[in-house]
Image 1: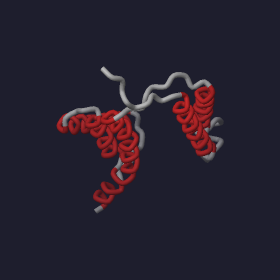
Image 2: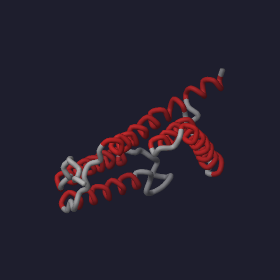
Image 3: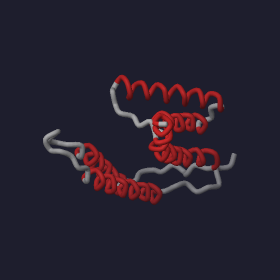
Image 4: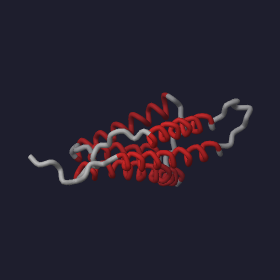
Amino acid sequence: MDAPKHPAAGPLSNRIAALVLLAFSVIYGVAGSGIDYAFSSDPLGPRVFPVLLALLLGAFSLIYLFVPGQAESWPQGTVLMRCLALPVLVLVAALLFEPLGFAASIFVMTAGVGRIFGASWRASLIGGLVQAALWYVIFGYLLDVYLPVGDLFAASRRG
């Protein structure tokens, strides 16, 4: 058997990934530090968690930048398509969150993940429906978290 014809990724590939993660940590830290809150509600406030995560991601990114280690070869074909489809699916679900609401966006994401990982349409749709209902019950009723119903469904409720 011959070895694959595509070149193996080297330390440069890891360093590029480290720089991208470092940029994400800076953006996340700046966004997190800009969260406004009333000091009387909590002395630490909601800014601490995102800023702490940004600092940790930044520190680990710097370690990864200077000690890149061994790199795996880049995925090819179907595996590459699956790797690219996941972040696109998360972005689509996030964009659908406000117009369609929590349950519908979670349904789209979980059904889509099922399809990406090879489930049949039927299994993906049933799994997405069960997941959406489960998470809606957990967050909406058990944890009493406000979950948006979405602009589309809110408009139909008013009329």
